[in-house]
Image 1 (cartoon, helix red, strand yellow):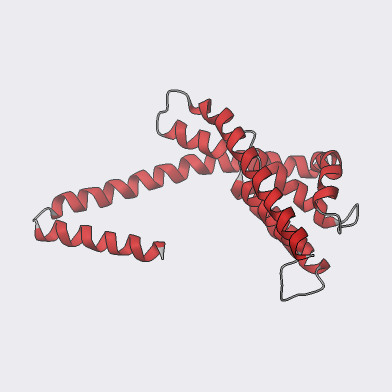
Image 2: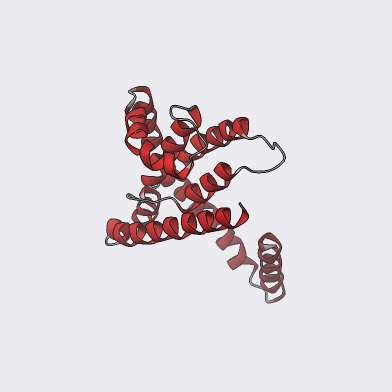
Length: 192
């Protein structure tokens, strides 16, 4: 639906520019937008490559495994049906670690692997299991300690204090995680 709205707005803008004789402005804005988008992609790529590399090093050095062991007591409570030491918990904890660093793009591969493992544990293959739903809630609302992507965007747009978003991000994502997981728990209890 949103795609349709954006498409309609784009067509209206282009049509208005042509009718009002502002095609030069339209052409200039298209070229400037393309350049701006390309520069933004380059900025984001630098941050993503850096943190993805750090996460790969952490994975190869077993740092993610140590982090997994550290948060396993919490994950065991959130995912009681998953056995301790299961590969799904390792992928979930890696996803949580990447999300804590504000790296949604680096967290995605771990999230996909976690969902694949959770699907393997799922008895009803045509329905999402409770664990899959809880993981989706946790992944979507995940607590972000260092919002690196947002900091990079603020830096790219010449913010006077790019890291000024850290506290508000931590508060917002913490509240979203608590609310989402609480609602997930209450709905699951109601249906049992």
